[in-house]
Amino acid sequence: MSRAQLMMETLEAGLSEISGRRVQVRSIRDKEFRKGTSFTIRRIDVQLGSGETLPVIFKDLNPLRQHQKARYVRRLELGPSRREIWMYQHVLPRLGLGTPELYGYRWDPKRGNLWLFIEDVGPHRLCYCLDLGFYEQAAAWAARFHASTAGRSNDPRLLRFDRTHYERVGEQLRAAFQERIPEHDLPFVDRTLATYDEFVQLVDGLPQGMIHGELFCKNILIRPDRAGDAIAVIDWETTAIGPQYVDLVSITSGRWTRSQRIAMRRAYFEALHSMADRPAVSAATDDADWNRFNQEVDLVAVLQAVRWLGFWVSGDPGEPKYASRVSRWIRELRLAMGEDVSS
Image (cartoon, rainbow, N blue to C red; front, side):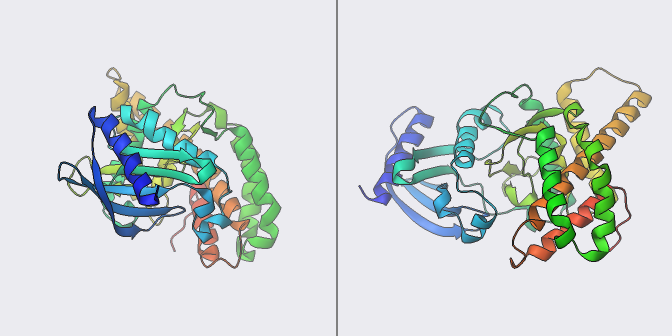
């Protein structure tokens, strides 16, 4: 059987299961390659027996076929690919949070066919948008996702962002920072690492739950046909159990002002509390909750900045974006530590 025929068979099985009746796929046609961060992603048109044309995203999850740049930063293992399919199959459909619908998948490691077919929600990534309103929507989406998945903390498929994890990433930065951190930033990073272990001891006391793990704007799409509910989150290989504010910190990272970051935090805070269906509270209690929330988010921001700074400084200095990534996460670390970063 040809690759195209096998893809059609996979889609027929998946679409038939969704509809509860047999769905015939007559043909598939590549529309274009879509830029992916690690794996090959194609936009395809699926011609159905009914005459309808269904736009679909095809993602090749075989780690041996990752983009060359991705091989520098990702291990050749099946766990992330298996985790993403599991999320689309068993977790995301029940949440009703606008993630792309699963149309079909094939898990055949022996033949190297690890395929994911999902709804094509359009090409508009949040990272190409400067409208703060969409970032506030994304922050509120993260809060609803965290509230909706509360209690799913023991599944072995998920990564763990626990105290051991953050101890390990701290050691990764310590092992490389003397040789890899720009000289003028060394004193600051050294001071941060001197107190980092104190932050790590507080990790397990933070609000915990299921997290996307890398909820950066590149992994968030904007549905073009919606206004107030436009967020569609993709790329679920890094789903984990850990401090919930990891996702919020990821959304708010980048060249935002303090007031813009606070606006995103407020959107998350209000969405989370509305999901909790709290009884009426006094203004003083609300202020105390808000202040505690911001202190905890600041703590997670430090942990995450150390994580990503350690990750990138341990990479290949010859990689074209190496310097800019290191600079970005030093800046994020300074912001998280309360320094005024105006440039």
